[in-house]
Amino acid sequence: MSVREEFDTWAADGRDRGMEDRHWHTAKHVLARMPVEEGETVVDLGTGSGYALRALRETKGAGRGYGLDASPEMLRNARSYTDDSRVSYVRGDFDALPFATDSVDHVFSMEAFYYASDPLRTLRELRRVLRPGGTFFCAVNYYEENVHSHGWQENIAIEMTRWDRQEYREAFREAGLFVAEQDNIPDRETEIPPETAFPTEGFDTRAAMVERYRELGTLLTVGVAPE
Ligand SMILES: C[S@@+](CC[C@H](N)C(=O)[O-])C[C@H]1O[C@@H](n2cnc3c(N)ncnc32)[C@H](O)[C@@H]1O
Image (tube, rainbow, N blue to C red):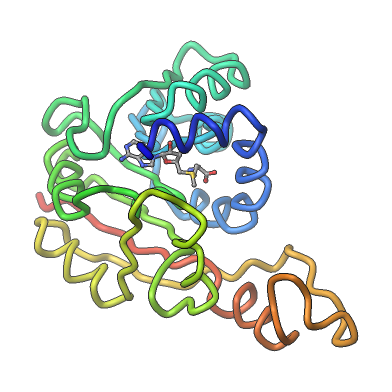
């Protein structure tokens, strides 16, 4: 199944908004850390419902936002939720970004980067489109140290890349990006039931669920394009 087919189905049955609700718990902290200044251009890689650009326009005065996605249905939904002429949702693939060299100030990506068919190529593309000093804020919940995410591949037909923290840093550097920061952003909002509720559908023990959300959370790696 292609990225388009998979995520068109998700968009059509409302999972775009479902993801937004869940990802917002940590994505908002990542967005708050981005050094976006008034008037700057931001790309959201794998935009889904497009929430990140709406938030960056509202909170930081980003001048222009482009939400890139391979799924026309995701894009259609994102456009329908956004009443802002400074935000566009564009169809494209992580393999070949439809942006000019040195034309983008910052890139955000939440729970999307690991779907790239060739992640190193995507990083090189990001390095190309970012202006010197531009940043890439890459947030993922699917990564090696998060053992609770390892089963996710079984439920999706697209091949996912499961790097660890070190592999993220090495790949960023290999693509020509400095690694400015790497951090785990805890999800403090997903409700964790009392001990007596376990095992649940997702977790054998309460301790495992606490580890998944409160300790491991979202892995953030921040790359900076050299001057
Ligand atoms: C799990 S969703 C996350 C959406 C959103 N960032 C969020 O936080 O809710 C991943 C998104 O990335 C898009 N995507 C995945 N692989 C892609 C690729 N190779 N090129 C472009 N978009 C892709 C999907 O269509 C989907 O909308």
